[in-house]
Length: 214
Image (cartoon, rainbow, N blue to C red):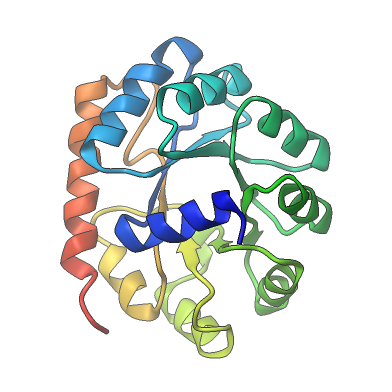
């Protein structure tokens, strides 16, 4: 297991919440990142459709070397190389693309491709993905997750993304997921670092409440 993959595995054990910082700008990145880190989040993702995402990734990586920082909405191998050059160690995609996964693995990065069907899930797992992003979670209900979990390798982490909030985490957890990607319910442009930290603490509390033996 490479170092980034090891960090991902550790983070999913300690606090399996991925902060999706869509819209984050470079000037606010250090303060928002520090606030999330102080609250206890270990995985920070800057989607590539944010303003100057590589600058934000570089700033977060420099300020928080013990956190797993990377990019989301990664759609090509070329983008993987740019993120790696900026200091990112995590690749999250909205879809399953073999070239993206293979490039991330070649560069020693943690990789979480997006899947919506068992066929995509098995293909991504067999290609070496470290975890799977269930996206969009709005159409992958806890009932669907339970069915997928029954056939997928038990140790393969599943992280629903899209519409995840405090009210539906428990249902997904009981269905068999190992973590969550949290977007606008956690961070949105214009929110202060204090507001984001408060939201992070609420999500950590909700995760701890549902993370009991199944």
